[in-house]
Length: 436
Image 1 (tube, one colour):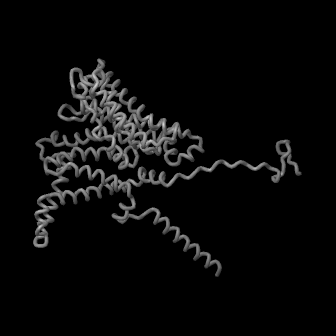
Image 2: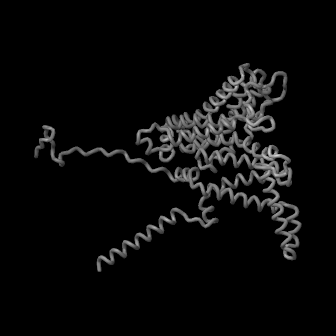
């Protein structure tokens, strides 16, 4: 055996060395996980083109259901121009009404009245942005938070009870009601996070069940005197919120835009900072990309699930507080969520789970909601068509290959295969030249 003087000690030959223990290799994420990440965090261009495709399909539906188009199509081969003119009038009129109902009303007699539709868009977008951020944050951790309805209901119940039952000074009352709503939403979502971390229960099943539990729990409280039901009333509705708890209007009494929109902007900045600038956000992203590799790297994956759902629930809870203290201040019933908890999933998908993308998607869907009523009133377009357009956006976002094919966009995988084949040909040519 040879000796070494390194360090003054004896070192055995390599043949007598103990085998080195290899670090455990990180498991590859499943195909379902890869698909989930691609859908929620894919190319932003696909989101834009998905909206375009949805509007095109919506235009076809508008033309198909328009009486003037059907009447002109009877003699299409004799006078095809009449049919195309009717289609243009129907689709153009509908989308013009959508624009004027959501952005600017050109028929208004003043700028203050003309800009009112855009303020309505921002008002509708306020809870959508907050709830969308909650869903998007959960997406970044690899969790599907579809319990927005339950989280909104519990936040609304907590903020509403504080809003109509306590007597506090202005500002303090609003802050306490806001805090109560955030905590209630966080705790309700935290149930799903704890169950996933401790028992492995799938968050989709848990959040669906929690939606039902929250709905019937709030419905019971609305029918129980002393809890949420208005005193002396037989209707399942709360008393009106006290003025000291209501969000102030930020543009005056002639507009409905309230302080909740400022809170949504602040929430967007906060989520951006968490995801992009904080160590907690780095851990969230690591767990979302590959939880097995994150665990090998020393990240507490179970803890990230709990923390993520708590923050996500607080953000969705902000949407519930917006509804109670900003929009429906005269009292609310069990339908206070108004479908926002499920619309938030669409907003987060369209925003590709990024904070500012979700913010923009929330404004877009707020425009759909505000302009949809103008389409219905001005052009007699069924409001359900707007809902179909929103659903088609989700469909196209979930099918990137379809969007790429329709718009003749290059596929990343196809480009990689072409480059690999071209490189292989170059190497063969080089080898043949060397052999010669």
